[in-house]
Length: 290
Image 1 (cartoon, rainbow, N blue to C red):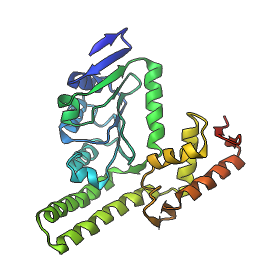
Image 2 (cartoon, one colour; image 1 turned 120 degrees about the horizontal axis):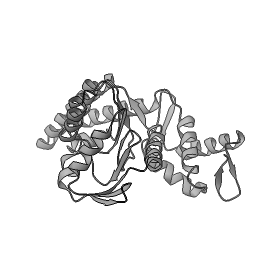
Image 3 (cartoon, rainbow, N blue to C red; image 1 turned 90 degrees about the vertical axis):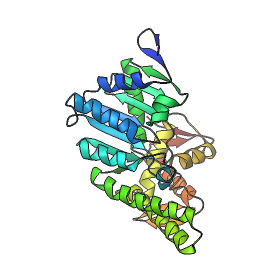
Image 4 (cartoon, one colour; image 1 turned 135 degrees about the horizontal axis):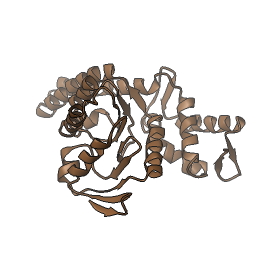
């Protein structure tokens, strides 16, 4: 790790030492942002917290992507998420399907923004690169940004992680069986289980929210960065919510609309926010009203 004036440092592979140093800084809150998560690194987290007697004190929030495809490909260990839920009373899991960032924040003391996932290759093996921040204002801003992103995702409680992991494990077994066999029954069972797993995640997305509420919050989130036209806004919203803004389906789950009519719902949310005085339109672009 190359040091620049003590507040900003380059993080180069392997960055195991930097990761352990970040964990050693934690006293109250550990924020983990990674699309892929493996037991090799969650065990490091548990070991570090347990060795300091902080496993019952620290709030650990993991923002990740728990779509079935991640488990099927082996990119994520669902058992690792179960272990975090069992051993850390303050553990929180956020499912955000558009996630690509890899960010790790210890309290308001240290933040690492990197290309490395929370996996052994991501920390120890691959050629990764990143930046570590110790400047208080930078760390606070990074944490705030990803806490804002977390509100756009679906919170999965610790009690729900194990059933989800079990269902996806069954799905993985069926997937392997379907790969090894050409029997139509196995393939059909796999397809049905895959659809059920997607539906379960959509249920999490729908719980306690409305399409209108999700899209309104996302519009405000995006316009807080820059004014933009609807033409620019639409694809950004679709990238954040690929499951809700899916052009290939049309379904309603617990009052939340998923699918083809998403642009209509975005326009309704824009007009609602305009009437409430939250945003304005200058004829070309939408602006956030502070």
